[in-house]
Amino acid sequence: MYQDNLAFAKEQDKLDPLASYKSQFHIPKDAEGNDWLYFTGNSLGLQPKETKAYINQELEDWANLGVEGHFEAKNPWLNYHELLTDKMAKIVGAKPIEVVVMNTLTTNLHLLMVSFYRPTKTKFKIVIESDAFPSDRYAVQSQLKFHGFSETDVIEWRPRKGEHLLRTEDLETIVREQGDAITLLLIGGVNYYTGQFLDLKRIAEIGHSKNCIVGIDLAHGAGNIQPHLHASGVDFAAWCTYKYLNSGPGSLGGVFVHEKHSKDKDLPRFAGWWNHNKETRFNMRQPFDVMEGAEGWQLSNPPILSMAAIKASLDLFDTVGMDALIEKSEKLTGYFEFLIQQISSDDIHIITPKNPKERGCQLSIQVKNADKSFHEKLTAHHIITDWREPGVIRCAPVPLYTSFEDVFRLVSVLKNLL
Image 1: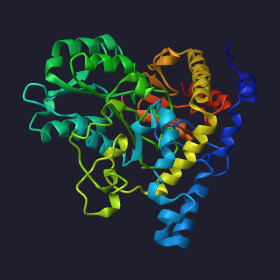
Image 2 (image 1 turned 180 degrees about the vertical axis):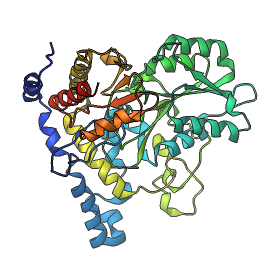
Image 3 (image 1 turned 45 degrees about the vertical axis):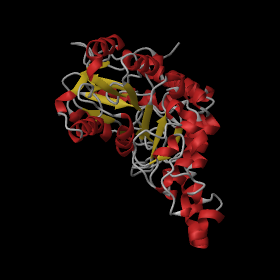
């Protein structure tokens, strides 16, 4: 199927229906003006060339209209966040009422845990994966301490000895044996270290079997895989938009709250004027009347300049569609995997699942006895990847702006370095 030569890679690029989209992104260049090979869209996505125009539109409306831009701008600011909802909902497989763009990832996780982490004296523990992203661990530990419990009340779902990947049956065992003391499962839907895409529907079923709330961190999933959040049955999810969704450094995140919770106005939550009923929001002297759906977790009015960058990316995603992106992702990552397997060295292997349905576009490559200097050698060859201890290079051939030739060139350098 695949061939280990440059001519094959170039032929695949000619056949790729999405190949033209690479030209719609700014690619970092070296001092001579040559494109770098960029494989870190799993940390920060590249900037769409249209982003500047989207932001400039809002700057012009601010300059020309002042406060009237809330109503008279080309995209009125008052309800700007609503322009993002439908397209974001498609990306994560949700209903529009279940999604809102607001705040940043860890802030959103805390706001969601205000509502969904409701510990009792006997049911208070939280399950996370052992290699959860550090910020998630810190958030969970601080929630436990805030409620008067201990950091040791975190239960870790671990890979088995000698393995890198999580097994769902091991989570089943944890919940079956300790579920009466567990109130929340907060799991990374795509593990940042290994790139493993977990079965969210099965995780929800496992958690709910013992009346646990199930939340998902989709930081490395949104725009990468299709999580089908509504169909999965998970209670809530949160994600950032600056990785695969290309919205710019530190940009706003997204929130999902399942429709089954949308009308529950008794859920405890923090309040602000932007999760108050929009019909009476500006009357100012109204008792708090929370909105239904995910919008009921907003606090403040939307930051327009950040949302403009998100809108630029979402419009691009909506044109291409997640199905087409996932189809190319599987082909591109499959080719990447094939080329790595052709390297005749026992010092390198892939720890990401082999099954394309259990991963997104990230491959985590473990290099035996390597340290960060190996990653630095790649950088010296104008290749941008991501190093994670111990000994893993994370590479994400993002289908919107990575070519088959890019992948071939990266692996050629890896061969030489080994």
